[in-house]
Image 1 (spheres, rainbow, N blue to C red):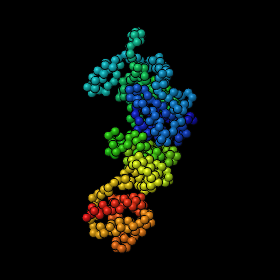
Image 2: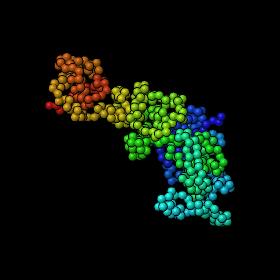
Image 3: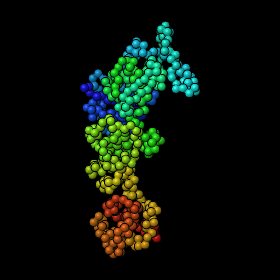
Image 4: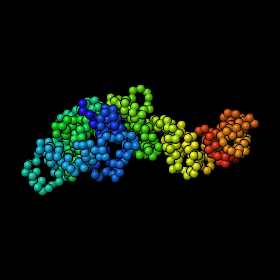
Length: 485
Ligand code: GLU
């Protein structure tokens, strides 16, 4: 059996987006699972829309996610390169196929101008029709074509689209899909006026010449597939298998859009926010694919092992931010303390000016169990860096209860008398106040927590007090006592 070859062909018109990353990831899983090759080709023919760091954003972020390719421009395989479409264009790859199509009368030269075509399309639209090329140049006389060529007239190359013909394929995700040519397109362009190939043409030529066996891509391309099948057929080339994955939708079931500000759209942003690549890989793998059973935390190797195309989902994949955060938290808590502090400290240092790094490390460790993403440490640890204690209404209300001022005064006094302010002595002082003032449980620990941290909930209180340090603690308690009176 021939080796499977799958591909991810980004257009460098933007940064790596969650939707594209998912396409790449499933192709990667497919290749690894079925012992195939995963190829990256760059579809850079949309000259106006290409951006300068489009390619590097794709490649760097895929690598960061752990999606490694077997073949691309930096890892050429004999007989398959180049991997940039513009380079392929320059060496005549597409022109050669065009010559063959013209020769066999499967395609023709179209001399219609943009203006003409636009007027035509507008007229069709206002008549309630899908704009289609009217076929004006379909059967031009030979001598007219020769004359036009002699005069170097700008033209495109169009495919002769078979009329009223069904195009059917057995989709890897959706099962049998059929489109009739009359519902899809009129004769469409293969080469633009500038001789650059259109997406639909270049993709067929490249998939065929690169021996791609399976094309797994997003559902947004499904209406391109019949057009591509027309090209395969016109050339007498064997078609690859096609699979179209359902779209990713937001919480409201709508297609992801830039306006969904609570969803991070670009992979580099996930890096910036402190999502772990392994966690994101795990999360994305569950967007539109599900494993058997209830378990949701899987390593890359486990995902490769379990992946089968029949579990790619037929309904849209909901992007659940809470699930993403839950998964990331699982991966963060699995880090060793050293790995964790290496990961989180840069976020803290980036936000606050900190001289004592071992103190900063201890602070980050307080929040390890609850952390959902690395940058969250800026907020979580804010009480260590703010000048004044800020109390919310819930805290203020709690402090209004009887005996709290006396308790806090006693605590401040005890703390003040500690020479070496460490956890053991802090605990001992609190115990003494408990005994001497006859207060226990919530009525001692909650006032202390609020008066030292300004919060009703938080990590290990004794450790937090130690890390805040004696001066700050006493200052905080006194300001709360003032507030109450
Ligand atoms: N360059 C196309 C895109 O980025 C690739 C589509 C395909 O997989 O055929 O959407």
